[in-house]
Image (cartoon, rainbow, N blue to C red):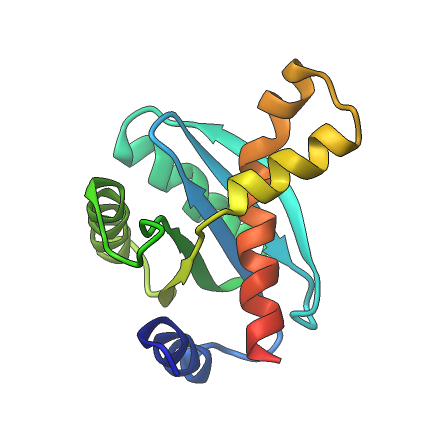
Length: 154
């Protein structure tokens, strides 16, 4: 079991029954958001938040988390293809540390390698315009990350 999978198992033990999971694709300009259903089987893309300041971003996420009864945040961890961590991973970890100071909701990282590539390929196959792809890629990547997590924990 990888470290990410072990952390996921540990985090799942902490969450309350009947809560949803929220997947996050943290980009430099946007945050893609997806949520699970109550049975934790299906991830649904929700929205894309334009990044401003951390305080505003966190407020938007925590308001949605409260409204959706979120019991766990699943943060996409942008590992390099060889599995090492670069500056984007450091940024994601910093975001998590700061968000953890504002909420009791547990958080776990999940490997997001190739999530944006897979989502973009699917949108190209669906013949979506460039504008539609740009509008949807982040929330769809968040759903891809969350669905991967949900599939792994079953």
